[in-house]
Image 1 (cartoon, one colour):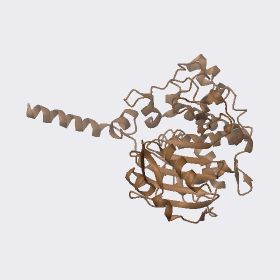
Image 2 (cartoon, rainbow, N blue to C red; image 1 turned 120 degrees about the horizontal axis):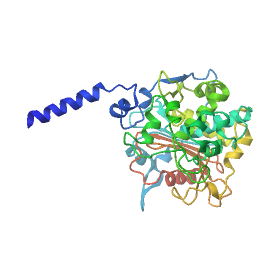
Image 3 (tube, rainbow, N blue to C red; image 1 turned 90 degrees about the vertical axis):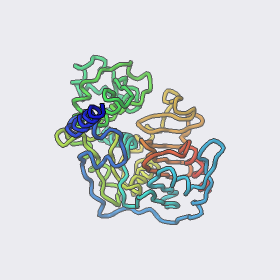
Image 4 (cartoon, rainbow, N blue to C red; image 1 turned 180 degrees about the vertical axis):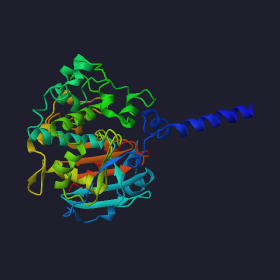
Amino acid sequence: MKNFRGLLIAIGVMFVFSCSTSTYSGRWVRWNASGIDDYLKFPSYPFRASSEPYHFVQAYDENLDQLMIPTGKDKKEALLSAITVSETTAFLIIKNDTILYEKYLNGYTRDSINTSFSVAKSITSLLAGVAIDQGLIESRDIEIVKYLPVLETVDSKYSKVRLSHLLDMKSGIQFKDHDLIWGDKPKAYYHPQLRERIIELPVKDEPGIHFKYNSYNPIVVGMVIEQVTGMMPAAYFEKQIWDQMGMEYPGSWSLDSDESQMTKMESGLNLRAIDFAKFGRLMLNKGQWEGKSIVSEEWIEETLSFDKSHLVPDYGVEIFYKNYWWLYSTDAEHVDIISGWGHLGQYLYIFPDTQVIIVRMGKDNDGVRSWGALFKAVNESVMN
């Protein structure tokens, strides 16, 4: 019996090591759980640091280390302690273009790469806005089969799917939201041929009706961008956004595989935390950067114009979702917070009223019951 068990273990080990990471099943077996070092696993499109980097003003307030913030029900903790024990790698507070707080923890430094996970979806929205600004995409309401006619041969219901449905997570495209090998959650992340995966997918629900968080949606947006620009989405991003924003460090955007070269629009924007903060500044300035329009004010205003149809009550009674941004509002009119969220607690929080940007990156998000409540408490402490 002991020898038989050893044989099974040996066969299992041989199976794992025989799996090629050039295939989806091989990646699922060998890579399995995703982590913030995944940018090392995927091929990527590299970006250069700017020759004229933009630097926020520095005016650090070390008293913020001891700011008491909520970390659980009826529980408060000093900020520095909370971010240390929660596997935070970077935590920045910026107000009026001035860095008030900048900490790197758990083995990370200012020049360490942090991957975005789903914060990349929010940046994908900006890129779609640029393509609309340039007239390459007709409008937010255009039917996607105009640019991707092959989809209508997959399922006739694709004729009803509009770009807005993709951007608002209401496409109705199949998405089995679990981590087992046949699930769409790992397939959207690990599949080495994302275009081929997309054209296998049926439309399961009526487009435009129900919110369902679906990582295929930004991939389809990337395919549209690819079609109308004739460029890799990462290259289009580099030219239209990255090169205009004075990035201090190099960066990259992960690709599905060397063979396919499809930009992983749903995740995999790999930057330093200080450069992530610049997207917060771009949103606060309504698409303007140092006097130049990168994304039109009209697109930013469109993103921030929402109604009750954008409410996502399963996530909170004050949370709305539009153009891959999570929007907080107490009255369904005024935007209190603009935010991007990513797996394992990657957060970009923007407070328009106080001109505050908070970036939190991490290996995990354990130890804090609500990062949203923590960020609100931080904002309130620096608002005056």
